[in-house]
Length: 354
Image (cartoon, rainbow, N blue to C red; front, side, top):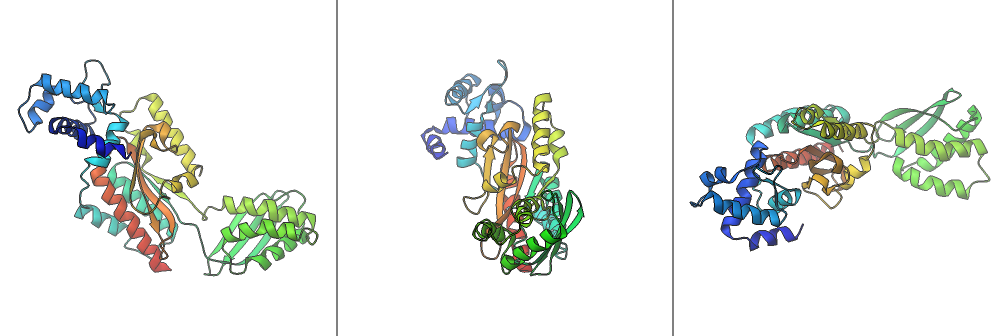
């Protein structure tokens, strides 16, 4: 990516203007751009033949492509990346967009999941793309853990957190559990849990089980080792990816294979696959990042672009992310400030809650 601005600097003014106008026209209309169209838009008077020669040079550089022999040009993914890195003019956040986002989160009494769902709906509505909102993990320390048998192959774990939050999670326990083994497993975990979050507890349990293997009943040990990983990973309120506006992507002009790829993408997301991958997209620090087409493995098959930003807690630690996904001809200049403002607003709201 770092070579793109250098390539722009090496272009002459005419090549740079032709390239910029092709990309801007494509982002606006989604249609290939022909040389005759550009002759009317150029700042200097040039012939269609001259513009065709410039377009051929840009195509040779891998920045433009012609979808059909007789059609005009569209930018390649490489061309879009160069435009975003070197020529994109990011707009100021529109006052109406700001007002719409602020109105979504005006009721700070909502629980976090409801708040994030409303944010996701607002983002998809404003951008006409699909929104992705990764809710934060519940990071309060665990105060108490209790297991309740619901049958031979179902059990309930009750988690009481230090901030008063209570979660009930149903999971499949290892075979042969008894009331006695469940009590022993709960006592073992409660002795370790004091002052630790779930993720911290998960880290220390493996070591403690090994160190105290002789003290634990075999069934209780199975419940601690297998059950812990299972009910932590299956907890719906632990970490959730909220997807809104998928219909916006399905309404486009994509052909059958493209539609199928987009459906598969959302099916995967809604089954909570690749949540970690989504958060990893933001792990290089704060600020908005733009991924175009195949640049990220999570959305590479769908031929989509993603604009994503992390949000942080009061300690400046990344705890979640918000993003907008759509066709590669997204209005990046408008969407970047929307995503940026939304991420900062969520971070402030969650920090204020403590």
